[in-house]
Length: 541
Image (cartoon, rainbow, N blue to C red; front, top):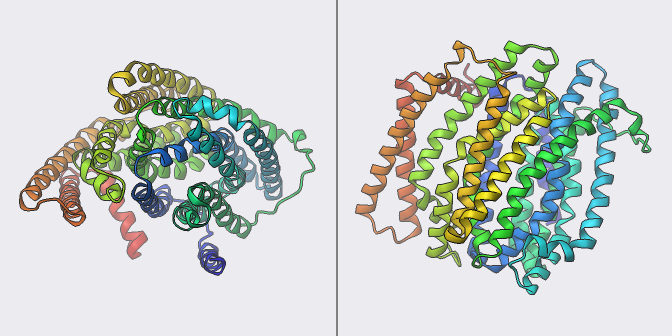
């Protein structure tokens, strides 16, 4: 095992060393992020299939997902979004002044501060878990709550390594070096898969928790290699970094963003709390459906938002209002170009998707029906969820972290209210409805308040673009539905391969028709996508 991992890291290091030049094109960077995102998400599907087939939607996975919540909260509050939103604009500003040594000192200060904070909070969390778990999973019996405590204590290793990795990732994104940043999630998923397959043979079901810890170590190592290759040098700060004005600015920017993430985390805790009071497996079902619908969100919403963030930060620093607005709307169009047709096809083929990805072993037909029902509800808000990363980063590039916080707080209040109102009658479906409505509300409010900084001009043609895109997506969905119905008349759909063939041919027909419609309707984003594919894959400009 050790030799195999060493060989993998050696191979990745050689590839990363040859790919450390900055990427100036947003589309090119997003392409790289999306390609590796696809690979990571495919591994995520493999991971979910392994979990579903081995354990089904039952007590073990309920425990696993509930245990994930507490260390994930710690990571999310201090790192996910909060760090990058505050760190990247300030780090980029220092680099723009051509003060590279000063920039590395700043990164070292933030890394030291974050690791120390993570260590203290992790120890605190581990000690007080027996009192925390009953609050987040009140519906679990004493035995399941104890299992959650044991799982979570192991998983608390992950925020330390993921936190350090996030600082290095911020450095890489700021320098527009996206390769290692894109590869790291692959290693995280590999670690979880190793835990679910190999780890359970040594540690029993606790191997699931050890897989999360192993994955976080691999995530960190992948980015550490690339950060060192682009010149990052760690400077030990001896805790004098509080005197650094840039560090204070980063912390000041992080506080409102941390509160924003905290508001968003209420959503996940509400789901965990209420799902724990439902039938066994409800939490697992929601997480499986959410993982499936979040694939296009990660591939396109997060990829484009991450790729454009340094450019938006630079344009904001230069006070280039027109450039900022044009870049924002162009990125928004690119995200919707992919997400809207995918949403339509996902709604049409949701049963086939769930059965192909998860339908094996202990994951029975009842689990399938519940999961694709939740998936259909969540997919309705996929367009809103996919725009939120771009909208949030637009505010952060303007060094405005307060507005997103208040909007998130309000939308999460909507989520909690609807969950309370709907869960008794609709069960896990009620949680999905609350989640969907809250996401649409949050996106709408962010668009409304961002209009002060982002001006719409006729060259963006948003309304015309949306009409053409909606028409192409609708036709694609109708063709996919027709092909799905036809395939159901010629096969029994009683085996994996028959359902897989129905999904591939129906989805393929829908994608093909969408491409033809995009060409016929002259959707600019399709031409951009085609040119980028020709350049990146075939070397043709």
